[in-house]
Amino acid sequence: MNNLQNYKLYFAPFQGITGHTYRKNWAKRFSGVDKMFTPFFTGVSNYKTFSKRQLFELSSTNFGNTKVIPQINSKSSTEILQFAQFCDDLGFDELNWNLGCPFPRVAKRGRGSGLLAKPLEVDNILNEVFAEIKIKFSIKCRIGYTDKNDIFELIPIFNKYSLSELIVHPRTGNQMYKGDVDLSVFKQVADLYRKNLVYNGNILDVSDIHKIQNLAPSVDTFMIGRGLLSNPFLAMQINNIEFANPTETLKSFIDDLLFDYIKQINNDGVVVNILKELWKYLCSSFGDGNSVFNIIKRTQNIDEYQTAVRRVFNEFEFVVID
Image (cartoon, rainbow, N blue to C red):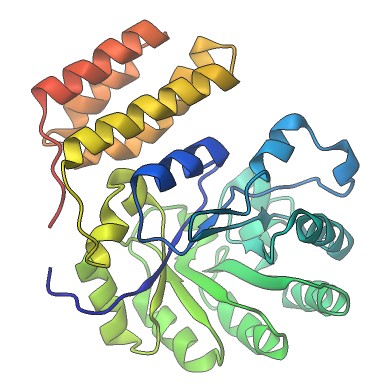
């Protein structure tokens, strides 16, 4: 690797995958990430009624030097403030507001990216939040839901408030994860936003980071999602952190995840389905990703899954991108 700069890297949240168990086991085997964001919480106006699962998700404020940042998906300043107080009580020092979730069931209810076309509503929420919040408050957003120009109505609003960071994924919500990121819009955002800006979207190797830096030299912080799910070593590669025996390390990581999920979930099918979601991404780091996932996706129980994983590691090469 020719990169001599250490970047600040964040692990993006993925509903159904990057929960507490995943975060704990990833941090046990890998490094190079400064923050890991929880999948979003919603409907949390009364934290006294939190389930054991919700409390478990907030049971660690960090893993070593990696901070955990709770994320909320809400259109209520009251709910955001109540959750922020709860996070503060637990020892977290930052809350992230999700204005990026692209899924229609979320966006059509005026949450996530569905709020991006409502700048006055966003302004009102931020005004009420910043009147009372005690911990740092950041935003993760897209550039719009259907219109990529929504972001330009929002930047003057974001500039008014003391956001700890603004994380921008330059796609619209209705794009989901399809099509190209709009780097020309991101460059304009970088020129207009006056504070801490983080880039998110389609970072699969270090060359993608160099592309963003050539476009927006002031940006040195990057959030990575699918790239890290596909290649758990990616942050280490980007920041020139040495590692050995990648195949054995990955095997241990996969085994640890399985055993932890078995201890927590008394349902083989649920455990296997959680791991299948991860393998949708992980398979791309093997020589023949489609064949790898076809082997994994047919499994229905723990025994079949373990047999399939052994077959994958025996028959396919784990290719760590250099």
